[in-house]
Length: 440
Ligand code: ADP
Ligand code: ASP
Ligand code: MG
Image (tube, rainbow, N blue to C red; front, side):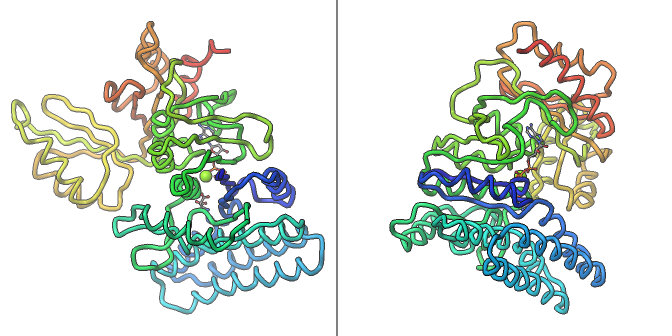
């Protein structure tokens, strides 16, 4: 069995849905994981945001606009009046569900239920489309098997047992469709795997079913060696190790959800990134093979806060770093990059919902400074393969970009740097020029 995940970028128009149908129509046993149609989850998030602010008019307006978009898609997608009618009724029922929340007092539960409508709609509409094209497929609800536990971690045993039970109900079927992103939590309520989480769904399913391959289909030819949104002339990387892919995804390469690497890595299931608009291209293959090539790629992650704690007592003192880390642990805040000097420690964090408490508690140990609007830039590859010295090339590229922190030596395939977000595009381009200019 292969697992194929199609992102929102692959589902936005009737032509793209047609392309997806062509890709999956080859008789190979497959489970298809679908995201919401592009832009939908953003719009649903806006609706929940306005409901939270008690601005029901704005929520109503976005809902109606989104509903019109779906009705138009249904008009163009289906050939027969019967399917157009079925799809229109389905769309109406989902939008009525969204509207049913407008008169209730707003809660996190309602937010999750509204956010789930995107994937529920795309999967049902796509299945109607396949049905109309006489392609036999079965729609399996992700809410029947995908579950996270009390720590918001996937409950892998539950997922495997329940998915196998659901599939066993359809003996002889070979094409299954399900929703990415959505799941149930430990209390059985509707929840999700966080933004971009459909990739994670695909890899959890891949792991549960010990799939032959997990394919992530999107709108680019695979993993690029730099962020194509900020750098021109980026190139596709044909092979990556799981560790390299995890590092790049974690530090900002949006093409893959960071958590989605681990389940496949543990079971050694190859992950392939492919382009829905260019299916013949081989894409990027992620496997356990270690990297031989030198520098593979650069990625950047925004929205980072850098906290510096300066203590005169740190000189020759032990226990200082432990106490600092305990504060982050207490507020369940992961630390990304850390650098130290004799009297200070600098730490970056991405999750900032507890930052005021963290800063307050850290003040017990010294003077605390915080810089917001920072970006982590991550350079990934086999650093040891470059005799000329990769650090020289990085510093040379960034000669006129102020670098706030640098972390090197944590492992042999990653250097991370911290720059102000306003310098990010310049830094990414300069690194591309120095690291990849002579390739090909
Ligand atoms: P999908 O809807 O298919 O999940 P995403 O928008 O989540 O698509 O991810 C694909 C996008 O990721 C690409 O269009 C590209 O702009 C962006 N991206 C960022 N960094 C990279 C990278 N290193 N390689 C490829 N794409 C990247
Ligand atoms: N639809 C969700 C999002 O936009 C999940 C995904 O696309 O992977 O974040
Ligand atoms: Mg995505």
